[in-house]
Image (tube, rainbow, N blue to C red; front, side, top):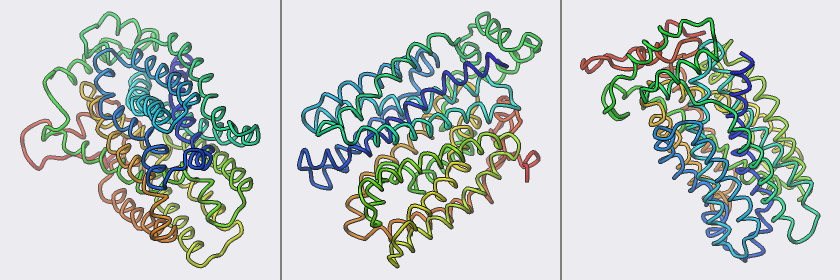
Length: 452
């Protein structure tokens, strides 16, 4: 188990770089707009959001290398993309070069949401899979916190502070590249490529006492079809589940908030320094409640965490909207947004990458994750791009009210459609969630193992 933990943490470090890359731009937000005299529309859609558009491309096409060259090699090249992005963006002298290198980093983010959860889910035992895959999310929020702290620490070093904020990411990127060389390839990926002996060696290293022959037989039976795709009728249910959990993740407003946390706090009446400092508080809250989510995901299950998170979303976002509408001022907006972050961390944050990595069969897992990640990142690119303009046109109170209403719909999704997946092997989940024959209405959910 120690080896599995070390390998899982190593792969999950891609999440640290994801979180750092996503949020580090928030500290440079206004500096860059003033430096290049950008309009709100150009600044939001090009300078700020280009990394997210790179993430969209990485998510759409990241399943290809994850399937073709393997989980490990894909994770290695993700580290290269992060490193190149940090160096290039830090030395950029115009918004277009800056955006181009941010796009490259986005490619790494998008691909990491496929390769890292797939790798960890495929080496983890069923009873510990939730918390091990959730290490990816833990590393995301750790990266977010470190980015907020880094931005705050570097804000007063001069007019080129933004270059240091962006460029410092090269250091953890290089460390990650070296670490990823030490992990083995995913045994389930090796099986999908008929490399049984290599898979057997990795499986034996993971657990010498396990019945390796049975697992090999189960995996082989589960992945015998090579010409299937995720859009076949029998995979419609997991496809719908992946779409909806990714859709609601972004319509909570989480990425919009993380990208513009200092700006939102300034809109609420806080000074610039207080706004940046409040952002660190967001990072700490995110980290603490992600740890709670990771600890509970294999005990309470995915579905109960989503119930808790959905209710917390509705309450916190409703209060944020009311704060702006009634001009409550003071610390009301930061406090309510801390509650929002806590709700996200214990619910969607802890669950999304675990859930999407579980619901597709082995042979199409990377493609299924690419679909779910693509939905997630298309919306993650569009919504933050619109925030500066929407704040100006309709006001933050209306924006947060829209997010509140979307979370009511998420609660209905959790109640009526989302199955429980905890404690079940990937092969058994494939049998349960997939149509195994051509009867049109045969969809089997895992309600029998629900924790509720």
